[in-house]
Image (cartoon, rainbow over all chains, first blue to last red):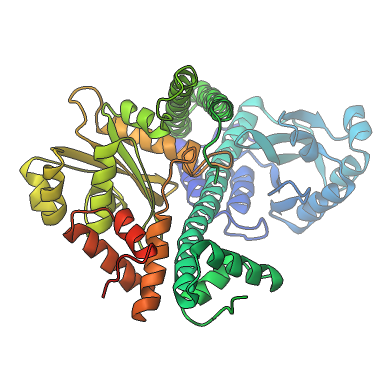
Length: 243
Length: 287
């Protein structure tokens, strides 16, 4: 394999690319995970790269990579639940390993056999860290028997870290938006419910506490949200008879 | 939203939040250190810069979590003192927020998508009165900080020039300077923190910004936060009840009724609460 470290300009482009990639499904060829797999293959000598990513806690694993055989291998590995990628999910890298060696054959019997058939001789896996946890892995496969060099694995880890950073920011963004929506919904609901209490109280000459009981009873017996019922009362599209 | 409770419950809750904020700060610091180490080992400028940039964000976030922890510590101290001195008013979380900004007067305003004020909390009477003015007049620093999504400061004559109604009324309250910063995270703004008459040299605009971010991260937009600020947030419940009643009396939209209540309160130099109470008791009919 070539041992030349990529030129700085090429590296800078890769990081800019990763930072600008949208976080989409792994199957999206313009998305972040495909971008990581592509740069992994192009920058790290002549090895092949696949990315495994678990977007949530459901156990579902997405796969991104280039080449039909390679993708089939990666999908199979996910199905078998074995392989260096899954091992790196724990957060520790899987060092360069010979696929025809005893270690690979005992730890990943099906994965190593299939990878050898495809012409790969060495494998390593780097954790894709997102925040506090490893949520995926960058798996590097080397044709032939030359070991994957430590400095290239270090570069691969930096690429994975850059992608992990984008994923972490995206996760925070989604969480923040959801919490902001919840907060706003809670506050707006509160306002509408108070307005509806006043509206009903004036409409039927009852107290605001009594008006609230009427609202709540209607929402419960019709299995509707209190805030929706309140909104209709305020908009005068719903009138509630009082006992 | 949590409501107020016994001192021991509030202390336990604040201590839990302080511990969480410290754990988050420690994690952010560890992440920053890892990236600083990687930057040191980087073989190219591009790699080094990427790691330094990420480390910088982690460092800033760590500092923000520590500020959040200190706000909780301060509240624990106030509650502990209060628990030993029954009969005194329950301490407010906002008092510590104000103190962190170098003043006794600070307010939090939470807004909706169209920037309408939905809930408010204040540390003392002057800040509560100032907030009421913004609510009644629909102009002021908190509104501008949220609509412009940037910090706003004004003092002296500039107050009146910028906000003719609000500025004059603020001067009548004896307030001479105001600063407001948006309460926002990941580009989403949920309100503003306003600081009144901060003591010069005690805190600066950066401090206000950091306190605002700490509040947003730890209390307003946190899965284990408390957007009700320990039961101190005021959602203007009675004012909205009165607006509902008035809209029924007048057959007008509830938004118009709310504006009538605000106008009446401002004209009578009264609070919206007080006008609302009179409407609810049937003592006042507007329109």
